[in-house]
Image (cartoon, rainbow, N blue to C red; front, side, top):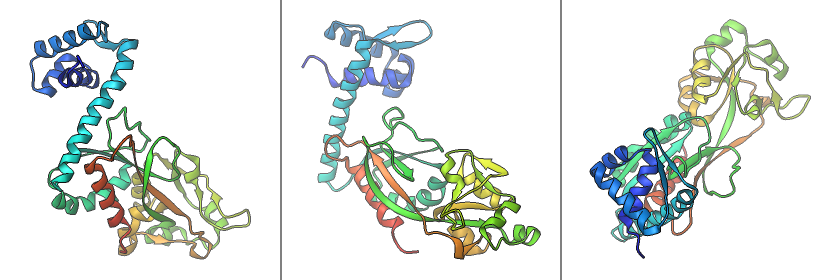
Length: 297
């Protein structure tokens, strides 16, 4: 093999960071050193991997093809190092986790103190948003997905299932009255989601079936925003237990239409790519979450 791991790492880092200067800083090398490494790699391969202009770098077709192979090689080396760490029973390395903001805040963050105490050599990098991301594109090890999985190329581990409940504050109910029948909701201010539309179909049994499609007066893209609007007395919302357990325990949110509520458990899965043996840092994190989230109370 003519190509070295350092050359592959330099090439991948330049692509990921977007510039030779940023890659040099990330790798703790000089700009000229990284530039020479890239030149040497291209000479060995007898092809141009990156087109350089004064403003940016762009992958050639050959560079795009080689990038996938280079990542696979680097991942294989990382996996080998993880296996050695496993033999020492001390999983280590950086673990990049992505989850929707509400789940990260209400379900993951409260569990991290215990996880970090048990696995002090794992460096956690937490990213949250409310859109599905491409794990490879975003260099993410574990994604946490709520609802039905769509990407069949991902491996998944079930973490938990959470009930959905229709909720409002006591102050809102005092001011606007309590709905007794599902159809009464049409007379109330309802808080829903901008997307997907399925989140605006609430698990309520009525004359038309077992889900009730609402027309929200207020819409938000994030479950946490919906929760905060409900807590502010702006209307009635339907939210999963993982983000409202404490609110309900304190009496800040009250469940409505209990006799009409259909038990609908929202699945939560940890998803990841797995070409070979699962990295130890991923395995222990997923196992820890699964056990903690399924624990009663």
